[in-house]
Length: 132
Image 1 (cartoon, rainbow, N blue to C red):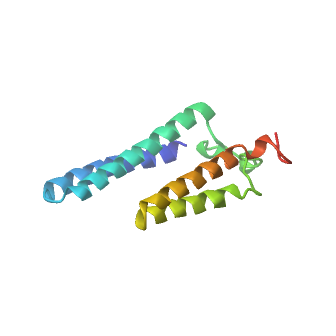
Image 2 (cartoon, rainbow, N blue to C red; image 1 turned 90 degrees about the vertical axis):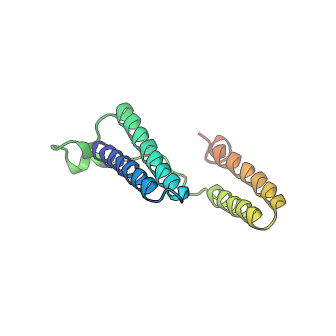
């Protein structure tokens, strides 16, 4: 993850420089400056996550010069191929955004549906056929 960390640290520095220059050149319009500063913060958050993950996981085959292709083979994690809950959560998010656009009361319906979908997704493997 050495390359990824370096890329995001350089991006954060770039956004700090651009945000400062934009703020000095267009002092009347602060929204762009804030947006660029938030981009720098996002790049720093991703850099921090990658740094902590690299410290916990250690060197990957991609980080070593003498690594073989087959070292990266095998299971990469656990994924839910039969899960319908992400679709339900996405539909709930769509209802929530629709509530922001049309009527604020619809937002509460979308939030309730999102809470049900999130609980269903989290506890999907706690019961039923796929219980662990």
